[in-house]
Structures are given as C-alpha cells and as structure tokens.
Length: 303
Image (cartoon, rainbow, N blue to C red; front, side):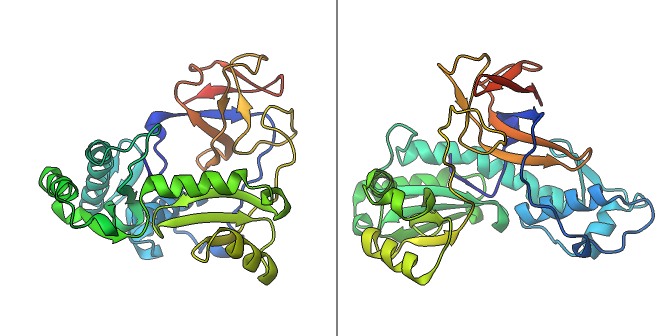
C-alpha cells in the first residue's frame, strides 16, 4: 500500500537501538514559550502529528489541545489529545487507509505485479484523500471506467476519492525505476535513492549534491520529468556489512546469520522519553527478541 507521509505503526515493530542514529532535531528557537504544565515533548508530539494528518498546526490549536481544562478526546492508537472534529478527521483517514487495500484489488496492483493502467496513493496531509491515477490513453476504456465506477461506489467517503488522468501507469513507473538503478552510469552520479513519486506521476531521485550540472546530466539520461532533491550521503557499505550507525536499508535478523534477513526501514524518535528507534516489518522478530546487524547484537524489539 502506498501511503504518503503516514507511519502505520500497528503493522510494524519498533527496534530500540544501542548505537546512535542521526535524526534531525527541532531547533530551540522553533519551540515557543510553553504554558505551565505543557512539556516540550507534548508540544512536539502535537506538532508532528498535526503536520502529518493535515490538522491545524498553530500554537493556539496545540495549546488548546494540551489544556487539561478542556474535555478533549484522546486518540487511542496515537495517545494524542484532539478536539471532537479533529478526532473525526483522524477516523476518516484511518477509514480511507483501510479502504486503500480494496482500491488496490480493484485496479489489480500488488507488490509482485503492478497495475498496467493505474496507480493509487493516500495523502494524509490532505486529511486522507485517496488519489487514483489512471493512465490517460485508457480513459475511454470500458473496463477502466467500470473500475473507476466501482471505486466511487464502494468508497466509505466519496469526497475522499480523487481520480486523475496521468501519463504513466504504476508498472511503467516501476520499469523506469528499475532501469535507472541498473544503468551503468548510476554509480557515477551521486544518487542516494530512486523511488516512484506517485504524487507527481514520475520518478524521484535523491542525490548527494544537487547542482546545475548534475541536474542536467540526470534529466538527459533518465527524462526531463524526473523529480530531483538533494538528500543524505551515499552509503558505501553493503546492507549486511557491520556499521557503526544505523540507517534504512541495512539487513537485520534474529541471529548472527544474515540468511533470511529483514530490512531496517526508517528512524523514529520517541518524544515521550527521547529514545532513538528504528522501524521494521512486524514479521521480522517477536517482542523482546534480540536483533542483529553485521553479526552483532544491536537492540531488542518492542512495540
């Protein structure tokens, strides 16, 4: 399922790390003077949650939510205080996130075989809008139109479905992504990641250093529509090599043997106790089980 800017922790484990993780900190001058009884952690939890879910991020809204004099609801899955109207928005997002699976079945896209005529993603920052992108030259197809009608009829919230007609299907985007990664010139360009950018219906490329020359070269090689951003440095080690820092893509396992390993996804910082964590798939290990990387124990699994 393609989810934009939404972390689905109920399907994932969080691994507590013994080694450090490089996570960007909020600058001190970005945090306002807080009311009595409101901690920095509570403020940041509210700020991040609201940004991800398209809620009001103003200090007024945050301080009201944290004011214990207001009888506000607490979203049980996220342990966050919200107004009744905000809670309804989160429930709608959850509903549409679940509905995404049905849309994927309708357009016949899976992790093993992508759709040849459409793609779908959810934008939580727009409060759960599910975008269905149909390949433009198939918009007159009877079969495709029947699928669009089925999506419109089956959605729990009709106002949360947006159908657009675009140039590329998901399969075509995946084919482009694969071709770029396998290109001989790939390693010479300082590329740190290549991904499908569903929102822009193109390929996104992150580079170590973005300049005019690099941009021109990449777009000449891979297409003028490529979406470029400057991102983190390249990782020179292999995913099973022992490293003294943790980042997404490293192979982990339940023992020192790398066979049958899983993959670290991304870093998170638990604001309530300021611990650094990493997220991985729920099937990778069990609660309190030791996790290994590069032959060494790096942490234990917790929810």
